[in-house]
Length: 192
Image (cartoon, rainbow, N blue to C red; front, side):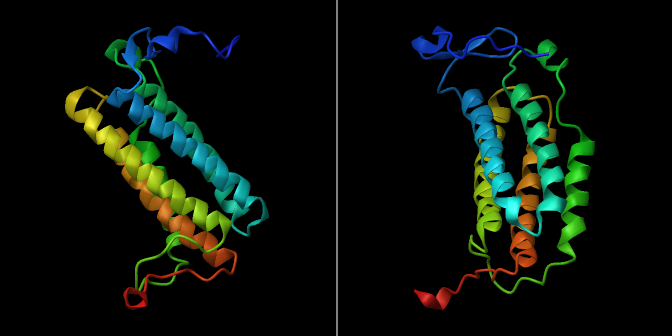
């Protein structure tokens, strides 16, 4: 059980932050950027969840997104842990999580019309927030790739998970627009 007694500790006033396991790192370290962006992604999925409250896609997507938010919290904890022994004791990303995302993608992708152009973000609030979350997810993926080039992150599964999640968010964005009867904005190169 996690117990948080105080929100502020003042230990970060020197420009460092505590990692899981007790190590400290500068707040601009790539490890902090990586798990901080995963946290930002999780917060963005909170916006998707709120936007879904009046969406026809709500009943199908909210349980999936709740699961994904918990998985992202686990991923953030793994990324916030430099010590490999401590990291090995944490719940992390497993192949089953990636497989689950693939099943979730396949579960709605067959409903979608084939793409004839690139999709512009929009298509109603849930769709637009899915596209926003997708871009944050891609940024998190880039940062985790960078972190993995210099430090151990426990294998390739975190990168694969974020890659698959960004695909899922794209498909879910399209699916929300479809379910809510919103036109899907498409790129028109001739409009400029």
